Image (cartoon, rainbow over all chains, first blue to last red; front, side, top):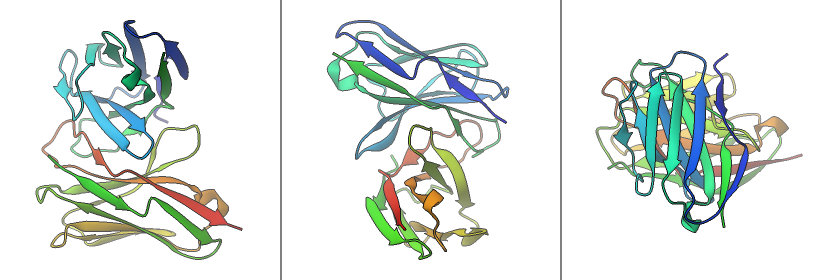
Length: 113
Length: 114
């Protein structure tokens, strides 16, 4: 089974802190994604990556950056956390085939105080 | 960019009845439409998907229909069971090979009443 793990289930940070959210997948998938999930808004794509060191902006990239130094690991970075970044963050991965299934991690609930 | 609308936001049905969730999309170039189920405390999981060259797809009690002309697609669950209670998301994307970020609807909270 594909397993996507996220470094923390719950995280509390202060405004202005630099925050790293880590995601690791064990199925040698080419593609990795970061979404945020907010009540009443569904899931929104922040960034995605189709290869090591490659990244593409999604629908809401402002205030975020990403890093993919290894194929299995995709990091989401909040350079200076703000209260409006309090949310559930979901990582996903998929194989290189077009429109292949995205496998999601359990999510990290981030609270910025 | 793509915009996906999903209705209803909450759906309550009696156990054993059918449930229907509807989505519309805006980008006529979209050609892949997956449905995800999210249980409490878990990430979404794919339950069924359909591509634009197909009008209907079934998998046991679940079916999805697609009307490309009207740009809408629907999820049908028959003989609902308590374990069907969850949040369901539709999504759409344009496939061009490689990574395909999905545009999701806002979700439907399905409640199965015993």
